[in-house]
Length: 112
Length: 113
Image (cartoon, rainbow over the protein chains, first blue to last red):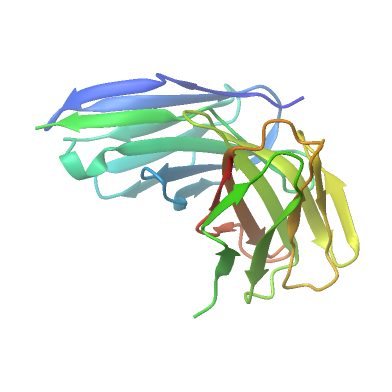
């Protein structure tokens, strides 16, 4: 059974600081996704990572994938208040008919 | 514009009542999914369908039922057998053979009163 773990679960950081969110998964994966969710809202797609060593960047967010370690990271550079949200990683396990398995989420709070 | 429409946005259910959540997509996507989200938690898969007239149970299917009579529609019924239905429900879809992105609806918040 595929399990996806994120840490930390909650992250409070000051504007201008850097930090990394970690996503570990337990079985082989076809692809990995990162999503953002604002309170009471749906999910906003951030990145999809398809292969080992994949790195994608958008603004202050950069995601990477290490399939050998079964680890993805979401790095935040020089955080700003607008990045405050909950971030989820989600994994499609190999041979699972494209079912997404989600991590528990990391609630990010960027303080002024 | 193409997308997924979920309705209603808010739904209140009395004890012992069945309610149906609507999910419609005009993206011509093959696969559709229903997820449940509880406060402070990730999303858990309830049911999914990859083709019309076929669907499979996800991780938490007990107390729920679905149908897929049309490609664009995948309604979810929360039955009285679901003892703790209060949650945020999200519908998603994707094209199986094409790009890898999932499109999510705006969600339905269900509350038991």
